[in-house]
Length: 404
Image: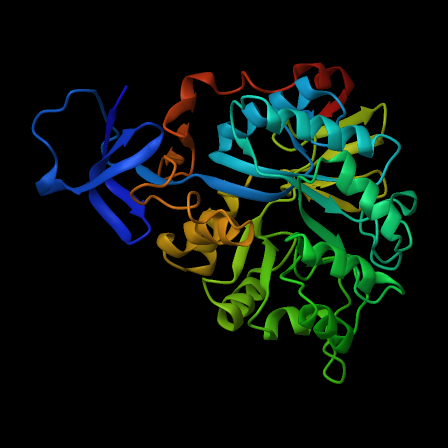
């Protein structure tokens, strides 16, 4: 059925408008300013009043949400994760995995999910976080989840994923990595620099060779020094690369976000949350069977037992809020960084990432307090506020030992 969606604040690719748009066959058929809205319409009309309508959020770095594991070999769990992400306005994502005993089964499960009719947020491909990363910049990644550069291992990843890998995070300073970089670039797979102790020169060499983005910029990277700017300096100075940036206000300071914005601007920054399995769950301490003591903190972060940060407990919509209300950029630019820029990195901007005629009708309706009222994927309502809490994995709560 055709739909006419109306609001006084619709964040289109060309700016914020008061008006509406028609959805037909899963796409934005026509966008109207208020004076041009049709007086009669032969379909469903939904008026969201003064609530904001933004493009569907695209998350490029995510390990799980609401108790569902993006690294699971279970197709049913991957599908439940897809549904849960619509609760925070995400309409598309690339599940991230680490090297493990089940990683190839996980690749196969994601590929199978992509091959079937999808519901919820759409999967655009696989993000490999490693295993060819620096043991000196692991963060919460385990040493067992790393490997020395090995082209045959990379080919096995590629084959078990049925070619559905979109991005590989790697450390450009590792011996033998260029053979893998060349393999990826030849296949149109994004090379992402992260978990790296690289110098400025080593990073630039990788960018010259085709690296296109840096992972959670500033985290798990060699810091800058005024005599050696390191991979972080290359990330911020080289206009060819996009920068993933965790924008929860805790992974990086507001001053760092301002620096990134001043150096790279709205067109090269991509908001991420780096959510994990426990993101979106009740705050407290858990005793998880596979991780031991684990905290969903009041600081908005996830922590493993030794206190190391393990990603954000808050969704990407919170990152948009940080950019608008704390950094002070326009909402139009923040939603570009959360939707259109990721779509560009994933080479999907011809059909995803913005409210524009003939693109897929992916969008979210949010309040002024950044609560998601509704999420539409390809024109279909996938989530509304009355369903809040119904998509979480409640079995996780048996491991809750202390609530905050």
